Length: 387
Ligand code: GDP
Ligand code: MN
Image 1 (spheres, rainbow, N blue to C red):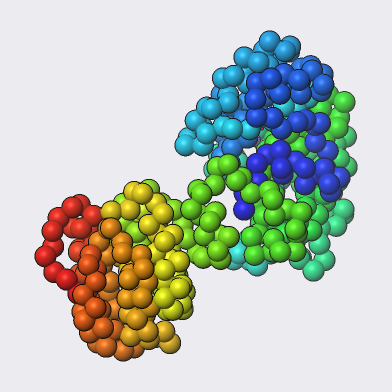
Image 2 (cartoon, rainbow, N blue to C red):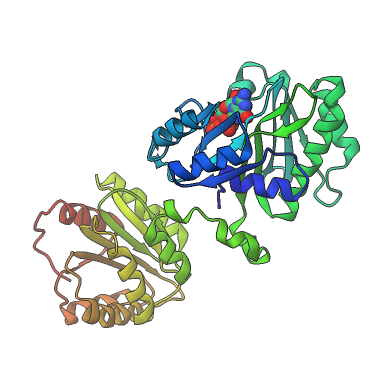
C-alpha cells in the first residue's frame, strides 16, 4: 500500500524524523485557514500517489492568503498523469541550503534492506544513478542487527554530506530505518532530505510503501489507504478477500491460480484483446465463490465479454462446471462468457456445461481458442458456437 506524502510524514514524525508542521485539506477555504494557522510562507502540495508533482505544477510556494487560494484553486482537481488531486497538504515552507536523497528499499536479490544516500537530491535518483553513480552510496543492512548509528555515520561520510550535518543525516537514516522496520514498510524514501540554513536536517517529501501482508500488525495504519482514489471494485474485492486487479480494457479475466491468470492475460493480449480486469479465483469451485467472482468481474461496466480459464488440478473441472451452472442460473449474465476447462475431469465438466446449455456461455478447449473467441465476442462478433 502506497501512502500519500502527508501520511508518510506522519509516520516519519512518529519515529522522530524531522518534518515541517502542516495540515491536510480538501477545499480552498480550508487551505486558506490552514495556511493562516501555520504562518507564511507555506507550500501548497498536491497529494497524489505519483512523484514529479513539482514539475507538474502541483507544488507551489505561497506568501499570503491570496496566493494560497490561487494555488489551492489551481491544484485541486488537477490531473497529474492520471491522478486527480483531491487532497492538499499545506506545510510551513522551509528555507533550503541543500537537497539530499535518502531511501531504504528491500533488495530482494540480496535478501536485505538497502540504504541509498546521495547529496544529489531533489532530482530523480535514477538520473543520479545513471549520470554520476559515484555520488550514490548503497549499503546493505543486516536485518537482524539493524542500522547502527555508526554505520549511518559511515554512510553520511562516504556520501560526502557536509561535515556539520553528518550527525543529523545519520540520525535521519537511523529514524528512516526505524520507520522501515517498525511500520513494516517495503520502501521509505525522502527526496529531498534538506539541510536548512540553520543546519537542521529535515524530510521535505515522503514516499512510503507499506507491506500489505503485514498490515494486520498495524491496525492504526489500516485506514491509510487512499480510499478516494482507489478503484471501488478493487476495494470491494479487498474487503471480500478476493484477488482482483482493475485494468482498462473490455475483457474480464477469471482464472484459478496466479500463474494461469497471468498467462491468460498474455494470450488475450496476443489475440488482440485488452483485459478490463482479472480475478484469481484460487482453488474455489463452489457456486457461491464463483458467483462472487462473476459479480466482481461484471461490476465493471466496461466488460463486454469474459474469459473463464480453469485448469483442473486438485480442483476438479466437473466441480467447477457445477459451480458455474449454479452461479449462472442465478446471475444470468448479459455479456458472453467463454469457458475453457482443462485438466482433472475436464471432459465431464465440458459435458455438464453442454448439457446445461446456458445462454451466453461458450465452451473452448484450448487457451488460444478461448482467447480468440473472447476477443471476437468483445468486438461484438457472433461466433455461432455454444458450449
Ligand atoms: P515531488 O516533485 O512530487 O517530488 O514533490 P516534492 O515534495 O519533492 O517537492 C518538489 C520540490 O519543491 C522540492 O524538490 C523542493 O525543491 C520544492 N519544495 C518543496 N517544499 C518546499 C519548501 O518548503 N520550501 C522550498 N523552498 N521549496 C520546497
Ligand atoms: Mn520529491
